[in-house]
Image 1 (cartoon, one colour):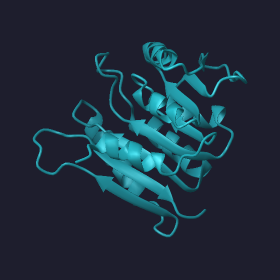
Image 2 (cartoon, rainbow, N blue to C red; image 1 turned 90 degrees about the horizontal axis):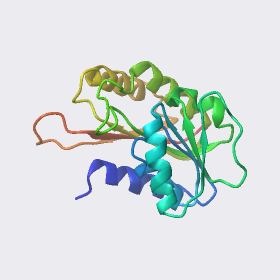
Image 3 (cartoon, rainbow, N blue to C red; image 1 turned 180 degrees about the vertical axis):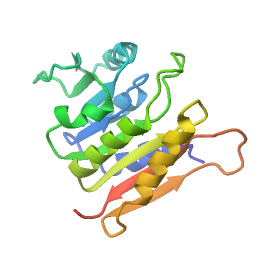
Amino acid sequence: MLKPLEMAHELLAEVINPKDVVVDATMGNGYDTLFLAMLQAEVYAFDIQKTALEMTEKRLNQAGILSDFLEEGRKELASHSTVHLIHSGHETVGQYVKKPVTAAIFNLGYLPKADKKLITRPETTLTALSALAKQLKVGGRIAVMVYYGHEGGEAEKTAVVNWVTSLPQECWEVMSYAPLNQIHTPPFLIVLEKRKEA
């Protein structure tokens, strides 16, 4: 049986073609960035922690994939690169990504093995989701992995679930995939697909 993150990757891979523009809204350790890059997409990956960019760049280099590293506030992208590592919060996605987007992925929560006080927050996550929802092509998908077993996680989970639930049914299909018999707070997946423009 697929785990939620494996399901997210499978559902995104179904809609991504080479050279499509995609977003990793929460770079973290770079696994999603690498997954998207291996699909030959043009990837815009965001993180506020420089450590995340360094780990992701190392992971991409080991796979032989070129990337460019943008500090916050700089917006010029290298023309040779298909992966743009952006040292900025995902709420700035609209400042960097100017083309229509085919897919995006979020891993909410904190960077594993790092400062657990540095977490994604409802206000920035909803800003990023709103921006990407507008830029998403019809037929495109956004996958949101919701990790909420930490301080502040429950508030973000509630905000995201309320936001996706309010999307108009005629324009969006929204599904969730979650374990039902696990103890504690297992992560779950929300996937949005744009059916038509609002």
